[in-house]
Structures are given as C-alpha cells and as structure tokens.
Length: 199
Image 1 (spheres, rainbow, N blue to C red):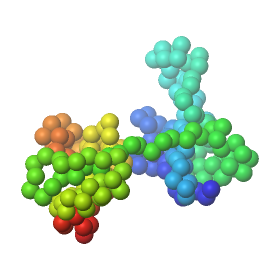
Image 2 (image 1 turned 135 degrees about the vertical axis):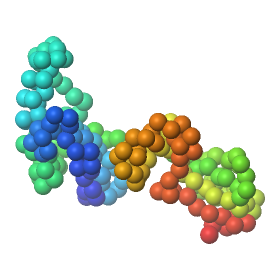
Image 3 (image 1 turned 90 degrees about the vertical axis):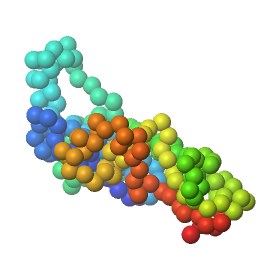
Image 4 (image 1 turned 45 degrees about the vertical axis):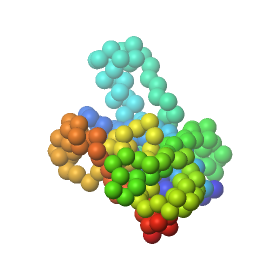
C-alpha cells in the first residue's frame, strides 16, 4: 500500500483554544492509502500534554491532572506537516503503524432517485448498479444522488469542509431550520438520466 493522502485536522481548524499552532496543539490525523483504506489517530505535542496537565490541575479534570488519556493517541514533537509525514513513514517502516493508527470504515451511503418534476423520491438503493438497472428498466428521467446515512447533509458537508461560507455566515445558517432541512451541495455524487440513460 502507498500513502495517497495525509489529512491533518488542525491545518483546517487551527490550534485548540488556548493552544499554539504546531507546538501546543493536538489534532486528528487521517492516513488515506491508494487502495481506499483509511487509518486514524490523534497526535498530541509534548508541550500540549504538559499544558493539558496544568489546565486539568486547575479545572479538576482527570483527577486534577493525575492522568490523561485519549483514544488512539500518540505524542509528537510538532504538528508541522513534514514532521507528521516523517513519523507516519517511520511507523510504517518499523511495522508499528497499525499499533498506533486504527482503521476506520467509510461512511455508509444510499442512492436516492428523484424523478423529473416529482416532489418525493421514487426509489432508494444501497448500490449504484441496482439503482441504474431500475432507472433503465423503467426508462426514467431524473436525478440519482448519493446520500450519507445517519447524518444530515449539512452536518456531513460541514465535517467534510464542503460548505464555502464565511465563518460568521456559517454560524448564522447553523441556527436556521429551513436552511439545514433543505441543504444540498453539488459536491454530492449525482447523475442525470433521460429516458433511462445517464447523461
């Protein structure tokens, strides 16, 4: 397997509140391989662990700083991308990668067909091929869209950083039920059909 992509959460979201970029921070790290498998872990800088200990001593968390834990965590010098890439490659070379990173399953999805001019969905399918067979057999015209399940489209798009809005505008929209309830995005996989044939 070859690494296709390394996703570093803090590159998008910035450091934790009260932290410092790269040195006093923690971040989820996702490693995507060319076969589609994704592994995830959370990296804490040494400075961040000490900072959390002092913070917890004041707040009373974790028995006032007597211990600290996080699922799938490892400690690193810095959250700068070159350092993370070096560490990930070393873990792979030492055959220790799977001891640190946990494999995560991709989110399940369904394919929803909306006929042209229809107000409601005409069919929902687990697999694209089943949906397209049904569309073809019935010579249907409309749109087939892939939806994530067990999550709203707005929440999914926000997690995937697919909402292109200024932070203040996004904060406003997050309180608008009509916007959230009808939200869609062109980033969702979708196909158009005319008389059963994909355009």
